[in-house]
Length: 81
Image (cartoon, rainbow, N blue to C red):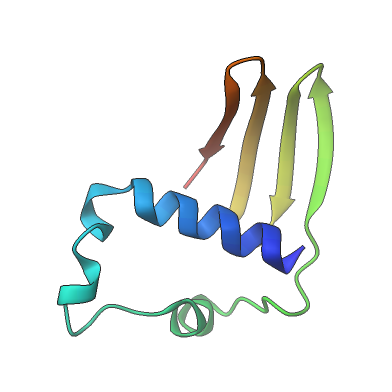
């Protein structure tokens, strides 16, 4: 589950325009610092999934919920934060 959470996090950060140039800022947090700042326990995190409909799921876990739509054209991930 930690790998799924890290993959989703990295995917969201890459897709966010504010994070594209993040490595050039001195005050950018890495994943461990971010988790500590929000009080997240990534090692002990329990991510639960629930099927809403065919091809539509919700992931419940650290920091909010994530909708996952799986279709013929690919996978769409929507983070509610």
